[in-house]
Each structure stands twice: as C-alpha cells, then as structure tokens.
Amino acid sequence: MSDKKSPRETAVRALMKMGGGKFSEAVLSEALDVTPMDSVNKRFCTTLFYGVIERKLTLDCIIGGYSKMPLGRLDHEVKNILRAGLYQLLFMDSVPDNAAVDESVKLCAAFKKTSAKGFVNALLRQFLRDGKRINDSSVAVKYSINPEIYDSFRADYGETKAAEILESFLTPDVTYIKLNNRRFTKDNLPDGFTPTDIPNVFSSGNVNLNSPEFAAGAYHIQDYSCAYACNLMEISGDEDILDVCAAPGGKSFTLAEMTDGTVYACDISEKRLEKVNTGAARLGLTNIRTFLHDGKSFNESFPKFTRILCDVPCSGLGVIRKKPEIRYKNAADFSHLPEVQYDILENSVRYLADGGMILYSTCTLRKAENEDVIARFLENHPEFTAEMRTIFPFDFNSDGFFIAKLAKLRTDK
Ligand SMILES: C[S@@+](CC[C@H](N)C(=O)[O-])C[C@H]1O[C@@H](n2cnc3c(N)ncnc32)[C@H](O)[C@@H]1O
Image (cartoon, rainbow, N blue to C red; front, top):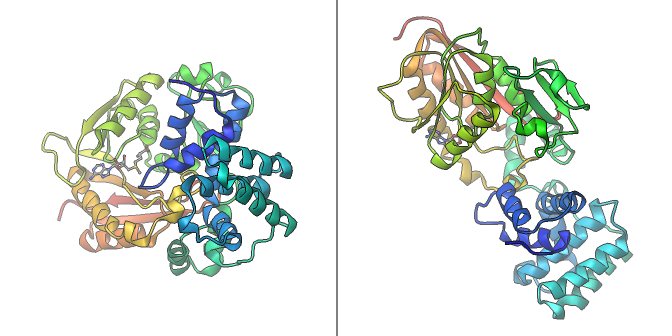
C-alpha cells in the first residue's frame, strides 16, 4: 500500500503511534514504508519525528504555557501538530517561521481537525511574538528528560557529569561502521570513511544502506563503543565464542570476522534472532550459528568456551540519542534488570573454560546495572579478576557503554 502524504503529515501520523512501549525506529520505518518519498523529504520527516520525541517535554511545556485547556485534554492530533510546529520553529533552521506556522495550520485539515486551525495558528504566532521564550529552566524541561533519569546520573556521577551526559544526548552523534575485513578492504569503501584507532572501524557521514557496497556486505553499522568491546575480547584466531544475548547481531558479526572458529549466537527472542541470520547472510559470514535460548538457563549441549560475551538486556540509558523514547521511562521500568543481568552472567560462567574470559557489557550508564552487578559477581567468584571501563557519550560522540572484562584466574571453586 502506498499513498502521497507530506513529510510533516507522515511525521505527525507516526508520532501519534508512539507510546505504549513502542520503539521509535520501528514506528518510523513502518510509516516510511507506506509513504514513499524522495530522500530530501524522508530526511525532513525523520528529523521532525525524532526531534519531536527528543524534545517532547520542552515542547509540551510551551504548549501548556499558552493553552487554556490542560495538555492532557487536548486532542491527540492537535497536540502532535503543535509539537511538530514548535519543533520546526525552535530547532529546524531550514524552515522559515511562517512556513512552520502555515503548514501546521494546514495539517489540521489533513487530520480532520479544522476547528483547531485558529487555535494552532494563534498559539504558534503568540510564541513567535514572545521571542520563542521558554519560561521554565528545570532539568526536565531543559533536557526533556524524566527527572528520575537525571537523578540516577547525578547519584552515580555527580551533578556536573550528569549535565554533561544530558547535554551530549542533545548533540548529534557520529556513525561508525565495522569493515567486513574477511572479504573486503578499506578500498571497497566509498570516500568519506575515516579510520579510527580500532582496526577496521571507521567513522562516516556517508553511510548509505541502499548502496551497492552495503548490499554486498562490505560493512555493518556498529557504534564505536561496541567495536571497542569486541576488540577487548582478544580473539587470536580460531576461538569458538559464545554470544549469550546476540540479537540483532552487531557484535556477533564483528566477532565472527575476527575468528576462524564458530560464534554461538544465542537470544531469547526468535524475531530478533532472525536479524542475526539475515545480517550474517548479507555479510557472507558462515561461522555464526544461532540458538533460540534463554541465557538464564543452562544448555547441556554447549561446549566450554574460552571467550564469552554477555551483552545483557539493560535500561539503554547510554543510547538515548538513538532511541529518544527512553528519555521518558521511569526508574521502576528498570528495577528488575540487575537481577536478570546477574542471573545471565552467573549462568554464563558455567560455560567458561579455565583461563578464559567473559566480557560483560551494557549500553547503560546506571551503576546498578554495571559496577554493582560486577561487584556482586566478584564477591561470589573470587577466582575472577575484573577490569572495568565506562564510555561516556561525550568521549567519542558514541553511545554510552559499560564493559567489564572478567578473567578466570584459577580452576572452578
Ligand atoms: C543489548 S541487546 C544485545 C545486542 C547484541 N549483542 C548486538 O550487539 O547486536 C540484548 C539482547 O538480549 C536479549 N535477551 C533478553 N533477555 C534475554 C535472556 N534471558 N536470554 C538471552 N537473551 C536475552 C534481547 O532479546 C536482546 O536481543
């Protein structure tokens, strides 16, 4: 099915589908699938969609300041038209103010809310007359974040670093790729791919998932922090590797490109595991075997491994830039995670050969899911040593990430 809608309308329709735990990437991708548009419009729609989610609390604060009706009672359509209009006024320099207002008013008709035209026009124009002022300097409004997340960063790293983290989530990140060095060299990459200090990892402003080199499997997108973690696994050539939580597969791909052995890529989600198979096929990697398996339970049929990756499910507070909906999660949404993470780690140890190494990692910056899980593990496993590193999102303009390299020194207790 395809139809012709403007990028603004498509973005607002997609915004209305958010909520209820939905992922922005999936919602947008579905919206773009049914509304084909050229690359310029696609970029506009994408920027507007992600931008509104990213700045939702800031935008809602403005709407709340002008509307006589409480925010919660505004029509869903009107609220999202206003959010999109305000986002263009505040953050999209390429859009003239008049166009942002006029197009927002036109959207009211597209959404069968013609009675709201006057209200939308008046609110946006009054905001312009007032010099685009935001009369609230609270952390929640300034950074558009659930204050519970700020409190967690502040408790773990102090006020200054917490603010630095939140600032960095509002600046553009860098896209990194991992070259498939099994089958390609850097000469197969187009211009604009800059080497990093990690072998075969490049930064680029020129990643095109419709390009022939991507289709041929020359690289996969992988954040710097994730490539860094894979590199710490010290693969020397032919190790079999257990990847306990592998989907959608980025780290399995990199590890499979580093070893002549087999990567056992496990995940609890069948649907996500399909992505590992699809990605491995595109990259031409034949040394990945996928297993639908719960990392908390022991699989008798697995051998012992000298290298195990536990890239556990987490709150994702390090990847807020890529997944802006995480900004509005509550602390209660995360409280169960340390127990799950610990259980997966504890079970994974049972597959580890003496002298082997487990790499525990998360894409979050909550100590409860990082250092505290490792401290508990070390208390119960004196036969391990740990080296830990937190990568902050401002370190490499990458995701925030935590890595603990757990080396098994002695034989089992
Ligand atoms: C952080 S993601 C892994 C990302 C992956 N390592 C990569 O680089 O693409 C965490 C994964 O853990 C999976 N997961 C959650 N609970 C699990 C469990 N009990 N056992 C195994 N996998 C689990 C999720 O389905 C998700 O795919």
